[in-house]
Length: 420
Image (tube, rainbow, N blue to C red; front, side, top):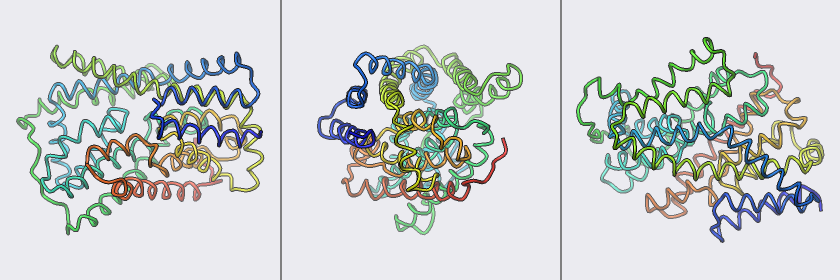
């Protein structure tokens, strides 16, 4: 059996486990890794060795980042700072549509998880509107805004493995000079789309969420962990001369320490307890993806399959197509990113394509299929009470359009040298 056929069979197997058998992602990914390895002719001991190596590599990269983001977000929520922060955003973005989009966008970056950001924001955003339809539209806009930043902006768990895997010669700061304007342009497009769908002539003027006062001290305390993260960046780069990989860990630890130091004991205890549980679930899923990705890599899949398909597709479309197929099967954006970076990092694509269009092509593939295997899809289905068709129209299709726009930019940048 060819490795490509085996790969597609395993993806179908994973989709079956996810949708019909309701198997936890970690177990389904682990099963997929074993099935793929054995089907590729690897002996059981070699498969287990590859699984363990993949698990360990991903845990080392993401454990501090995911844990810190989860604890920061849930500590702030327990401390009552969340509404204060949303109120501060309201001062800069008075329109309700803009507020919903930018809140999702920013909180996804701050918590390093788009789903965590939505779960935190949904009760606050949901109180702005009493009309069920407009309320749901705001929640969908919050969700899509959170996914846009999560899949495009460094440093999120989606982009980190891509830049580390095949972003050699591309500074993360230089990458964000392209990714941030691009993501904000997509966000503005989403605001216009949702506003037009609502039938409103402009931004609706919903009541501002209560923030319990408007003093500057409260705002500073609420935003302090993220101020600490931003302040830590130049210190890590220019004073301690840390690598970008080490810098990400250090700045997240700085934010975590600030959040815990400023929180009262009860909020600190709640944030640590809930944050640890949430981070553990996320880490298991990502580590499962690391195991599957490493088994695929060790099987020789990249050396066998990518040269065979390189003549049938333009180079920049190959990572997009591969990522879109994996995303459709797995549903997890980080898992897809981890697998894509591991499998493609050692291929000729990493040397043929400029780093920027390569990263954008994968990011486009991560966005293009957000449907039945995507846990965020079902979270929105439950939270809003919308039908599958409604969620597809208000979540899946807008994100697919954003993915197509990112791919269009990647095609435009293909073969254009980008300064390091």
